[in-house]
Length: 345
Image (tube, rainbow, N blue to C red; front, top):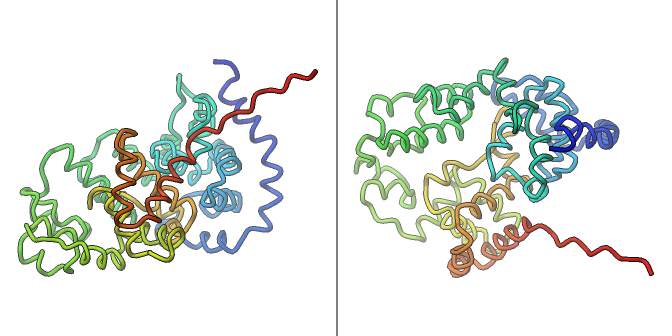
């Protein structure tokens, strides 16, 4: 396999750690704000370390060349926060930027996983030794634990992960949940339609805002204008609004509607957000360049190459800015052409 996984990672770290450490003292205001975000939930070991916060700030700014080697070094030193984040990046394609996506396989493995076996091992295994939150992610990925995984994420205030767990469970068992479970305080209000009949009671639907997509699960019509208005204030739509505010400020409302249509479903909307609120809050992630990139990447990965351009054309009818932005984000993942070597005379 050539250069070993350890040497690949060490070689990158040797050239960059000195630069990284020199920048810690000049951490930006964004890093200081992020330092407070884990206080919203139980603190993960290492999430307050200056080195982790500096690497996190760079990663949120989409700088993978500096942040990923830094996370890898911290993970090897036993930083649980870095181990969890690397595990989530490794498992979630939408969190992987162009630099990481286009790395050779061996280098990707060296950056994202701990040594072991033919392809390394997820750092989440190491994190799970001390972090119940990490253990929950492993149970989710290995399809163990059932409803208790979702309940555990809710207890840790990991709302996005809780929703993901419930949607995975419904997909796996091909049925919803009984009324007693849905009535429990921890169960997300946003998923109350996941009943055994996979429908929402008419009285519950009529109590929702006119543009709420869940009204459709009670057979109610959903006008596009009402949906657009709902998206402007719904907590679930924060990532879409933040992306549109930054990229299409002159047409934020129509851009948000276009991105929702591109996601294709309410369930897809429920799956996006901060990878872990113990490491970065939903607000901080949504407004970051990484958060915007993750929205576009998730949409891109939902459409095959055959239908992608047709999708952009259809979205242009809603908002041309949103369609152009998604097209540009998709193209940013194309590996650049390497210049031919010049042979001296």
